Amino acid sequence: MKPYYQDKWVTIYHGDCRDLTFEGISAVVTDPPYELGFMGKTWDSKGISFQKETWEHLRQSCLSGSPLLSFGGTRTFHRIACAIEDAGWEIRDCIMYVYGQGFPKSLDISKAIDKQQGIDREDKFEGAFERHAGPTGNKRCDKCGKWLVSGSPCQCPRPQDMPQSPEAQLWEGYGTALKPAYEPIILAMNPLDGTFANNALKHGVAGLNIDECRVGYPDGDDALEKGLKRAESPRADIRGGGFHTGTDWAEKRNIVASGMTSKGRFPANFIHDGSQMVLELFPESKGAFAPVKRGQNGKSKGIYGDYAEKGDDGATYYGDNGSAARFFYCAKASKAERNKGCGDLEPEQMDESRKEGNPGGDNPRNRGVHKVNNNHPTVKPLALMEYLVKLIKMPEYNLVIDPFMGSGTTLLACIRLGIPCIGIDNDEHTCEIAARRCSQEVMDFSEVK
Image (cartoon, rainbow, N blue to C red):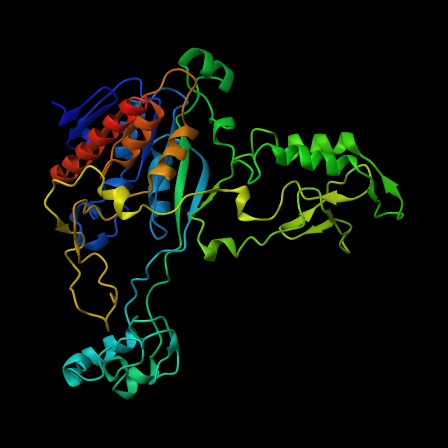
């Protein structure tokens, strides 16, 4: 098959990934269809992700020990994971990408009951009590009494939003879905040829790139030195109230158990977007070497569970502080990021199933309605994909494939890391978006180099 686009780093094919065979693939990084019919897209309802044959075909192109990273939806990722496992891959872990900007797409059961009984609330109260603009300055709404930001629309209940029939009133407040706040990322591996050591020497592929993916400290490399100084200073002995130094234990615990070296914290299977919702889950603890009091069961009680290990002084210490800074964080893709390189493309609507001007329905912010240059609905953050590609990057030989490349963010990440890559998609418009973005990224990358 002739490439749709090709440059020094990237080769893009327009077609079905099951029709293309390659050799020497070092890793698979992809965001496949979740098979949800998302935003009315037909490519998300063909079942290709659930078929073990899809992942078998990919595995045949990969080297022994090649890692695979595949996103999945919360409702269907288990089906993708089963297909991957049935195809002969070994499931190694599951990374969670947690975010606070998800938008709930839930059916209002009360409204559906009224509609089934022939009551159309919008027609019944057409033009009545439309959303009104907030007052000048931060003041309370004169109708509902809530504080409003200057000029922002108030969300006062309208007659259109209130249940009309007795049955609908009984089911007021019931919906069909939760607010999405995370995406699982399946981590799998093509079976090894013997041991990890043998596979590394024979095929040039083995394990994960731990050190390059360590999470840095907020205070830089000085954090380790400060932590060790605290460890070397006398501190209270919980057992007898005396003092004990315990420097050797602190260094061992520091480096081996918590991964807190000058290179950064050991990468975890948790990634977040830095939103306030996520940060509040991880309040600041007392610090890297704060003592933890014993519980009644003889174990030490920490804010994240029981810890049985003790230091030389009888106390147990946190191996790290309790804030979300211990995890890699990445915000969602911005408008500028997703549209970069696509300025010449004709703007198109992202979600054909959405209708504009429906503030009382399930799309009050008209999401997916406004036309954009890059109208792919599931653009992943570039920083996130760069981190994931770096995780599976090998010391010398690399050739990454994304069989469901979408708008090409995985390819952009590979370009930034100087890794040759292959992208495949069966939608020609999507291939054009990916080609434009890659072309721009290669240009920027060449200027930096």
